[in-house]
Length: 206
Image 1: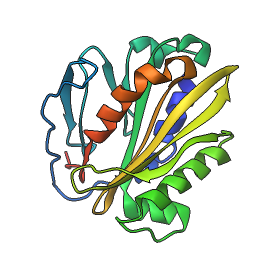
Image 2: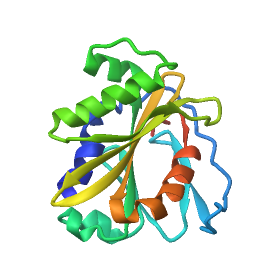
Image 3: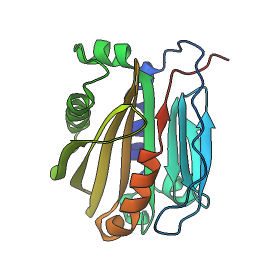
Image 4: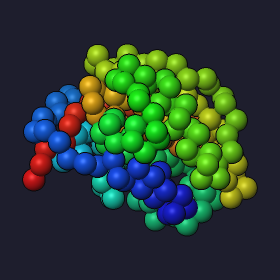
């Protein structure tokens, strides 16, 4: 399980080429319809700001970010240990570097196309997906964004994964949020709230 979580955060670690000194705005604390209390998170070196449930855990690794409902998710060795938990992974980087890596020439308005490429890249790594919810646009703070919902089988368990892409000018965040299918209905509003609160910007140099 650790290797599968790290795969998503290391897939585009080369994207992390630092650029200009812009700092992400920090989202305000929010309460979703589920009654979950959210707290703000901001990391200017990653160029990410978002909110997450106050009892979840946050970990930055390999230039990416993982937000998990429990530390056991990060420590787990297989999906059988995921239980009722879930996680959200962020891979931020420059759009120009993504284009270099994929041999494409995407612009900030191509979030849905990039979303499809993200899925293809994961499939090249051995993932097999069934599309549950086709790609569609999101409305997030004037950023270009999109998401899709996929189903796969890992370690004998049925996994529901949300893939999302958020672009702010020349900077992009690739996002994956996942839980077992048995917990997907409970996790979905939390995943949606985290993703839709995300603000992306260029990282600040240390």
